[in-house]
Length: 180
Image (spheres, rainbow, N blue to C red):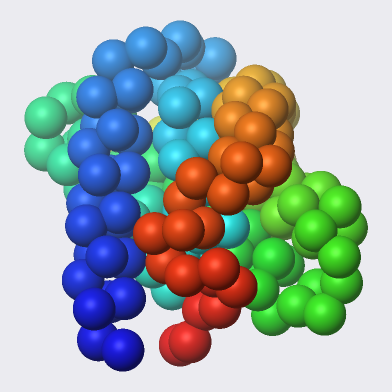
């Protein structure tokens, strides 16, 4: 039913707004601004909306954060890759597994996607877009991991509670099946 796409669009818009508003609570680690609320939003979007919608919400949040000077161009690789991998782990890779297996896989997908892959993809952004010639390939892995781990812990508590009471599941239907 097409009504589900409207619900997903509204949820993605809400999560994007939450990520932008939550980026006011960021802390600097090195040259990057770490925003744990963005990682929390990535996990919620990945679990409830699926990988493509989560990646779109991550892109929109990073774009708005850059336009409003609440973030840096380093927000793009981390938020997009992390949210996509989180959603892919939850909905595609471990689709047939029970919930107690899928949720930790989604959390791990966000950590690896944002910290390792997004951290390494941040190097060309820092070197060529931001002009930081001193940056190395693994410069942003540790700062991204610190921010992402805080956001993942917050999301783990929140998503586990939401799944237990099926609060958001009822919005999208009982089985919360993602059809891409």
